[in-house]
Length: 304
Ligand code: AMP
Image (cartoon, rainbow, N blue to C red; front, side, top):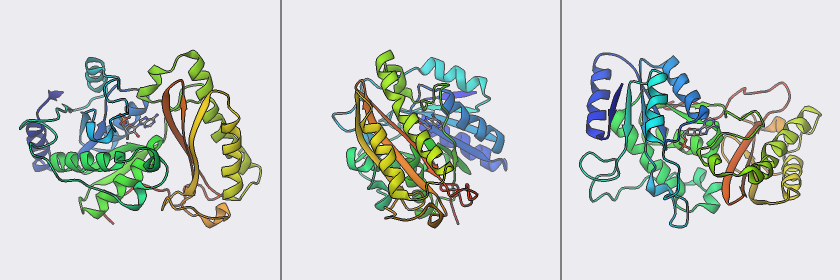
């Protein structure tokens, strides 16, 4: 496995792979790798001839008041996890310099307009601009055939799928289902900062999303009522500071109005952000009318 800090070396590696007629799979991460990241790597491994993982805590997607400084960094463990899973190249990104991710004098931004607006877009101004820009840069460095993202960050995957199409990158954006701990909490690098109490509080999130799943299974079919149910359950959770509960058309991320699940072929996205013990957590579920599951599952392809 090649481990490099130099984006030029990564570019040359990817060029050689493509020139040999082999496919390149890219898994962009911010490190502190856990089983959620491993699932992306394993999917890439299964579908691509060569796999590159990037570990880069991208400063442009954090606002000044966020946790850039305290974001967990576990580079040695990340390298070992990649090696164990047969990754071919790990790029440990640097922010500046000739070898860096951002060119000196950098001033080009990618902004995916509509999909960046709801949910986290309302609470993290500039966040998706930072995400879209760094992913566009990584796509430029690696020119991968496929790139892998988690459904845990559903809106992010939609934003990236859109930019891959809009910029005619030819990159196929693949999404991988959320990996959860046994207690239901979606894995996140930030979970290490939850103490036992905060973790107990945080479990209200997967519980509320499960209530929505069960409600649909027992016949609930109105988007508005599903949103109300999840909101009510989360607001009742002591110690949890709810930022948003949104129920959106999972394809467009538009408010669906008072529609039936059956009217949403791409499903109803129920997305949540809440703070437990000072740690901001997000989670979501995509609900389908019974019998219509994943008929046209949301973010999957690049060029079409
Ligand atoms: P991050 O390092 O948090 O920026 O995440 C890198 C990639 O891993 C993103 O595409 C995330 O959506 C994905 N990811 C993070 N947590 C999970 C999880 N619990 N299950 C599946 N994918 C995840």
